[in-house]
Length: 634
Ligand code: F6R
Image: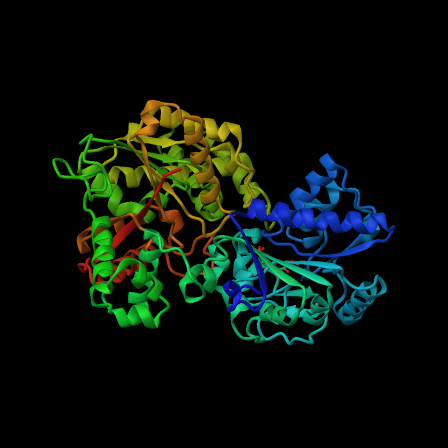
């Protein structure tokens, strides 16, 4: 084993992104299926659900349709199923597998096995036993695909599951249920409390295991499972005891592995400026010392003696990195007029810039860069906001109904023509009263929900001082499925984004560079912007347009990545908070709360304060809060 991997107790393969990784995994599965078929033997696949394996399944479907891969000799066993759940329910894994894979390939329905979430409670134990026996009868699982929960679960073997646990009914962790909430109309009480899961011992009997993980959101748990101790607290760590397991990761999910996080601790590396910045800031944070107080001994004791050999004394390196950091700080995010801009993040000219802030949802602009947004407006730039999606699915039903009722009452009071509004009122009332869990809203309700968010965004724009004609509501079509699951970004979406960029000809574009959730709307919106930039790359104005990425409400850039840090005073923090408050439908318990119970303004404030604190800990000036940006250079 190479020196690189000494901390890793499970083999890992890291790919640039989930798509490339999924293609590689699908290819391995296809090769295996073909080899077995050539010997006239069946092959047994263990399959997972969840958002992670979807890209693998879609590639398998492509291989079937375009390259003739046949699943005639494939037997599948799924890991788990909610309990109780009817197979036809929108959220059942039975339905998921049909929609994502089985309906599109030539697998025989009788060869697809999924635990039955509809079995009588008294028959569960027998059902589980029979499920395991059936796997054994086929000679065991040849190739098991797994995802990993943020709490380390595999299948639904939640923390506390023993290594020899068998297939059984499992109580779901609170965090798992919260993670599934968006599939259940955003209502925790609709999420089943239990699931039937293949036991750890059956998973470990598989001849080969491929665990997939995408996105920064999985980075911590992946590192714990791969590098930590084997513990029932992290069931995925049991995979350390399996001889033929690989973790297939995208770069974001691999981020916390030692060989990525601190490669200098493992091997000789090439010390370029970015790695030096990463290592020195990491050293200062670990030793809790300001950068300018790091010594040669600190460098030597922490695997950085090569750096000293290459670049001289700690003193010189410290000063260099310190001033790099200092130059990222600016109160002039659109460039400082009449100032030498050599060491500033943005150009001084043109003094008045045209700026587009792309906001995936109607509130990301203010949540993620409200302080910078305000400064750009106050400093006289021509600021445009482009709301990429309507954000309509994140509005609660009763909120929508409240507004419909308001219009109806208002019309009543002033004797306006009431036919339209009372029709809408009756239709919405009828629908919402009988709406089933997870049911897609009728177009009228969706429209009202979108309108509520549009109104909130307009209120924020007014509050910050953006003229109405500078607020663009793109309503990108990929988003308008009425479900959490969106369509992939299409030509039409890219053209809408491109048309706005072409119209404004901005000098600066700000966009959500959120990679924490690779399946999320932010990533899709960013891909749309990248694609539009690519299409326009021959235009003169685009060569002169700088694209700055902000990070969403969930995670901040690592300190060594930050290229522009915009400080905020306590008053500016408060103003930003009031700007966020304009989004009333996203306050006081939202539809998509996620694992974090804090409200958006709290998350934003905590994060901005944390960034400022890290700068201060590294020895730079003490600001109350900071918003951070990375420049995308294409
Ligand atoms: C799904 C399963 C779970 C998921 C895990 C990750 O069959 O057994 O262990 O693999 O919860 O879910 P996603 O992929 O949605 O992040």
